[in-house]
Every structure is written in structure tokens, then in C-alpha cells.
Image (cartoon, rainbow, N blue to C red; front, side, top):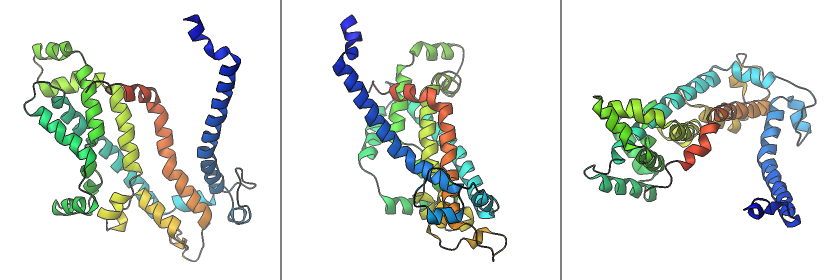
Length: 293
């Protein structure tokens, strides 16, 4: 046991550790450097962006890009829309996933195995873009925010992991709750869900990131530009050559390149700030419920 514990203190083990650190630092730099460049560009002047092909620290700090987007009604509306859709959509998706996972975790559920097989089938075979669009259209969800939430309300992978987690909870807890007069819904809400915070927090992060970064759904289902989310606004800004539409004074040309960098930062930062609050549950939640079938 002692030899197993200290095997990495050998010369070969130390070389292995150094090699791992170098590889991880290189991978981290590859992921971090582009973000730092965009962050630095969002605070740089338009002239510096045009003259310096790459930099991680601006020579002159400028807030003109952020002032321009914060003064834009279209940007503020897209940001508020994305926040509301993300919060409401994540809540609905978690509730629907947990509500479906709970009965499927019961071994004596009639038809439970068949239903589970159908769910697994959807993980392998999907209808595709056009059939999904036709379903959304026939349900009257076009040009509504429900089109961004309901088509992906229950993720099969999340459902199976949460179901397996529910199966690992002691059955005595449910029996005690039912002896006290609680029905199935009361047991789920007051007993099961409070004990499932790690796995629920993990998939809340997955759902929130998915909704926040969703670009294809607004592109397909929202024809009204006043309903666009932040990702659609980001697409419009990065593809445009004239951004005078963001200014109250049409004759004034805002810092176009700086605005593109600033919008990218604003679109990325909320998720980065949200992750640390769920980090303690993240690794634990991914492991819980992933063993039993």
C-alpha cells in the first residue's frame, strides 16, 4: 500500500507529472487566450484594434463599445429576453424531467420498460429539423417563446441519469412519507427533490447553457426581430458592417469592432459567472445516478 501511494515520487513519476502539467497548461492556454483577446479588444479603441493584429492588454482602455450596446434598446431587449427564457425554460425542463423520471424509477410501473426503451430510441434516432419545425408550426408555437423551451423540454440523457439517481435513494424514505399521508407528488416535492440537489444542479447548468447558447431555435421559430434572443443579436452584430443602428444619433458611427467583442463578452460572461455557484455539485452530480441501469 505504501509503495502504491508513493509510486509517483520516483524520477519516472515526476517526469510524468511534469509532462501532464505541460500538456494541461497548453490546452488551457489554447482555450483561454482567444477569450482574453476578445476581452482585451472589447476595452480597446477602434484604432488600436485596427493597427494591432493581436494583443492581450489594450494600450488605452475605452468603454465606448459597452456604452454603445447598453444604450441600444435592441441589445437590452435581447439580453432581458434571453435571461427570462433561460430561467423559465430551465425551471420547466427540470420539473418536467424530474416528474417523468420519478415514475420511471419505480420497478413496478406498468409499461415502464417499454417507455424507457422508447426514450432510449430517441437518443439514437431523431426526427430532424424539418419534422420538428412542422410539429412546432402545427402546435401554433411559431413566434412564441415556448418554441424555444418545449421542443427540448426533456432531454433523454438527463432523464435516464436522474431516473437512476432516484432509484439509488433509500425506499424507506418514500415509505415513511406515505405512512405520514403524503401522496406521490408530495413525496417527490418534499422528499425526493431536496435529496437530489447535486444531480438537479448539474442538469440545471446543462439546460441553462443549452438555452442560453441556443441559436438555431430562434432562427427557425422567431420571425419577429423584436423577440430575438442575445444569440440572434450577436449574429446580427457580427455579420453587420454598419452598426449605426445601435446609436440614438444615426449619423454617429459606433466602434464596430469593439462592439462585436463587447457583445461576445456579454453573451459569454453570465454563464461563466453562474458556473462557480454549481461547481460543488457538478462533479458529484455527474457521477451520481450513472452506475445503475
